[in-house]
Structures are given as structure tokens and as C-alpha cells.
Image (cartoon, rainbow, N blue to C red; front, side, top):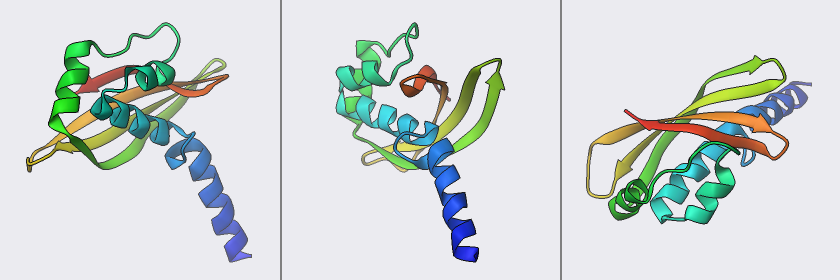
Length: 121
């Protein structure tokens, strides 16, 4: 019975957070796309109506060779029929001991979680 309970807990965390299609997984994929300079992937992971990062930002992330140190879902909320999540990703640039905290706000729609806002701070 305990194994079944842990399986369910893992499954719900997979859906809400860390799985490939969860908010945390999409946020990590977004940061990876920034690092790779993959504008097509950034567009795919961006919610309709939201803007993607400019070329200067994409180029600076690509040149920095960013590594993701950690990520976590900070909050999830429902507003009417819309679901939102805020995910924090901690990343570092190659050769640097300093880390940057990236905050992404995502909205869940018919195509899964998509980024609506991205900030660094």
C-alpha cells in the first residue's frame, strides 16, 4: 500500500511540476532553449499573445553557456478557468561561480504549460 501511495504522489508531482510536460519541466526547457539560442523552441514554449525574448537576450544566454543548477515551482493558482504557475530556475554561466535566479510565469492551456512572463533577478 505504501508503494502505491508513493507512486500516486510521484505521478501528481510529475503532472504539476517536474515532469517534462509540467510547469517546472517547461520552465527548464525554456531556459535550455535560451542557452541553445533555439528561437523556434522558445516560440513553441511561449503562450499565445506573450512575447519571446529579444535577440540580444537570446545571444547573451547562448554565449554564456548556461547550466541549470536547480528549479522549483514557487506557486500555483487558478483564476477562473485559467491555471498559472510561477517557477524559479537557478542557473550559472560556464566558468562562473555566481548564479542567477530566473523567474517564469506559466499558463496552462490546451497545449499544456506555456511561458507568459520571464524575468531575471
